[in-house]
Image 1: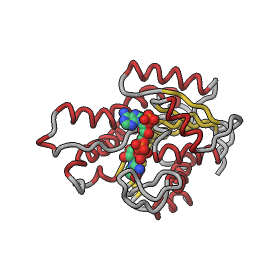
Image 2: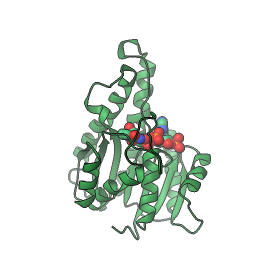
Image 3: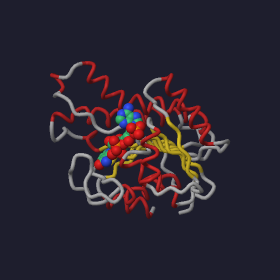
Image 4: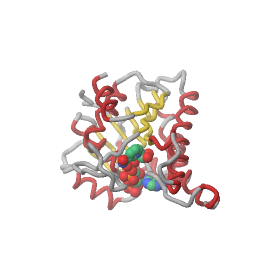
Length: 245
Ligand SMILES: NC(=O)c1ccc[n+]([C@@H]2O[C@H](COP(=O)([O-])OP(=O)(O)OC[C@H]3O[C@@H](n4cnc5c(N)ncnc54)[C@H](OP(=O)(O)O)[C@@H]3O)[C@@H](O)[C@H]2O)c1
């Protein structure tokens, strides 16, 4: 699957999922703009991905926590794009906050959980989606299977909330873009994914495969017809099926 001539912006690029996606899109021939809140972590990412100076890879420091920082992130991304139009956006930002069970949490903790999941995707969509609405582009967010079930530990309930909020946000964006060319989707991952070359996810739980193995599902969506969907990956077999679709 070639992405020669395509431009992909990856938010949350330094993360477990984001880093694998950056490598996979680079390998597929795309020009990749990796976005992180930290220049230092972007330098680390370049080392992790063995990026050479001549590779089609640019970085942008940006934070989508509020409208002011989002404006600055947009300027940094535009500079990294150097006039290229965006073909695909992946927003794989944030992970799961741990906290006290619901009735023992504070409203501030609740707000923080939503900020670290929903709000950053909200600002990312406001910044990057309008410009690609009439292009054969994709805007793909990433969530997790905690969205659909009581969490195994009450300390993870904010993860349930965050993932469900991202999934619900997808439907709002789906309604807005129903008549547009762009395809908005969310990939909801129901299993652990390890960092490139790893065997465990962030919880230290064994992960059968790493984010490089996950990437073909995202590349398939970028090439596919899915539109306005929350695409649940219940297991690695679903990744393989999507990759072959
Ligand atoms: N890894 C798994 O096993 C797994 C399984 C199921 C679902 N998922 C889902 O996949 C998505 C990405 O997960 P991941 O495993 O790649 O997480 P991760 O390793 O923590 O990466 C997420 C990245 O998001 C960036 N980020 C930007 N704004 C943030 C904010 N306000 N708070 C926290 N991080 C922020 C961080 O990069 P900077 O700090 O560099 O900005 C971070 O590297 C999440 O939605 C997660 O629920 C992951």
